[in-house]
Length: 136
Image (cartoon, rainbow, N blue to C red; front, top):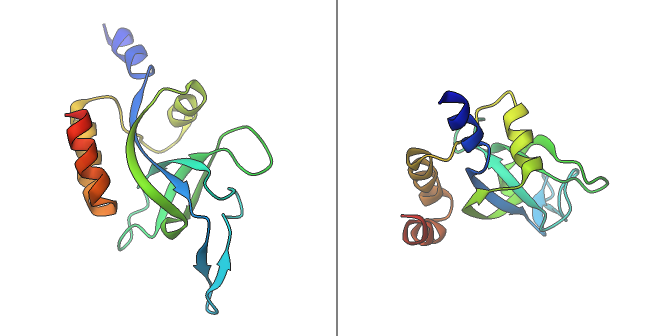
């Protein structure tokens, strides 16, 4: 029974996703940057908020970097990510990366969904309302 539940969890998981910002101010001179060192602009990233701090300035993300197709897990500044939203993740490569991570990612339970909607209300209130209507 436990093995069945574990394999069912691996079919999909709830996750916050976002896109890398096209432009954002960087440094003391507020120089405009396009994308990040690791990700091109508008790249989709899967987000985990394990790094607390005041306001979660840094976030853990999984995504495909600029020069390869393999998913990586890195910490980036939250200001580099836009369009936060809730999604079910089905991609086997992403789920595998989440399961291999030393950090805890959300599962596919209703409580995980509700927790993510609460976080989304803080990050992107408009999307939180959409998620409530769509997933509850």
